[in-house]
Image (cartoon, rainbow, N blue to C red; front, top):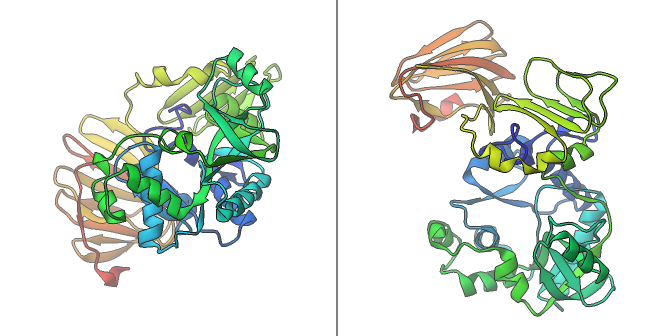
Length: 430
């Protein structure tokens, strides 16, 4: 929620298209990391470990180019990594001696970051140390990161100690000792991960762990493994690395000062505007500020203060107004007592589930594109201006033959996302 109002419980920061890609088109953190890793190591197998709510956004932005290992519950990083390791071993039949690298999906880095991964993989394959970490050369004493204390100043060094996030004075002391930021990147052999998983968690294989995941211990990988491992080393990395976790740091990585409809007058200084609304924003005399607007709300903040947004956002109770799905996206346009109006956008070749609703009627008005609607098994073509009515209980879906935009009006009492019954699709429709 630190990038509210663009991020929410469904749309986390990794999926916000606020960065500029090589073709000039906007891209998200996960798209950038995937692009860089694939370019540095063509053919590398990438598995994304994630929660259920993120699957649609991943498929929307990366398609079927990555494997997805779904965490049925939130149990912290150690169980998540164990589940992904079991997935690789049992579902994808990866041999135990294969090197595996675990990394976050949201750093802002150069390609050299992923080139260092190749070194880490080679170190893991040598198996001289059980675990290899990537240590980031600090650029300033930070209270936001954990620290790795190496035994010496060599490029690859044994780890002497781990330190939690310190206060500023202690951080300065760590830097004087040659400490490195802990960027949360680990390399090891797959069989090492499986060994640690079976030592601490109660399961037999991937499917067993998935089924019993909610009962597993909630613990971080750092605490469960890294801080307890004697055979551990760190590889120094001195290239560009930024944690884009707040509006302040994210705006530093933006190519321009404006995304969306906005105007900054000549007296504005170091101010960024991100506007997802279809209305203009005018800023005058703003200095060191960030303005962000979406259907979920509007943020106007001093950049330094934007780092402290979370407790205030936690008090806000707001329906999610926008989400990316595997088939496209939806935007809530209006909410009234007994009705909701939504803009639905489907990518070409995609479709909704075949489903019905028990407690609401729906009316679709096609605004753009061509498609096919299925109503209780009967197929009909639709295009701009066509109106389709679906009373409660009617089974329906739509296929997009081109980019398709639909205005959906939901009518009924107690409209809810849970009011949905899914059915098998007739193969002849696809």
